[in-house]
Image (cartoon, rainbow, N blue to C red; front, side, top):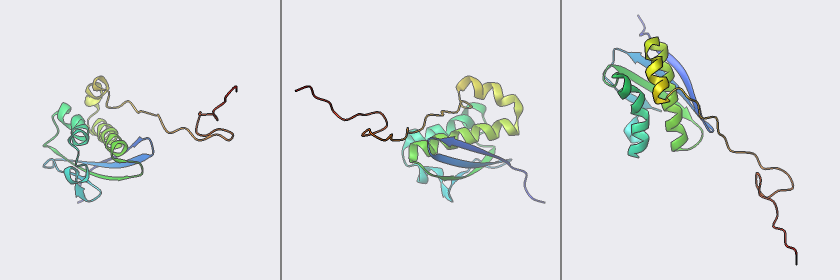
Length: 131
């Protein structure tokens, strides 16, 4: 019989993370086939990924596998965090209040603004001089 898992998607900037949460695991987190500490070498990014699991006490009782693409490391780690939080809520609806109070379910929708014609950037105009 196949294992039951909960699949969700987390997004941030241009990064997308497909998260699978498998209950009854040993607490392994795999990102794109590597351990998450190897994939995200910066400790603040590792802490961001662990936070939803640590706040709910599920760090050692579930396995997480992630496929992420697009963007940079910071955007990808935030996308993974959102995906893990959504998967935990899918797994146990009573965790929603904990996730909501810590702000894990709040999606940061800010993206890079496109460049407009006639300007040097998204909003930067050509420099104007009077004399």
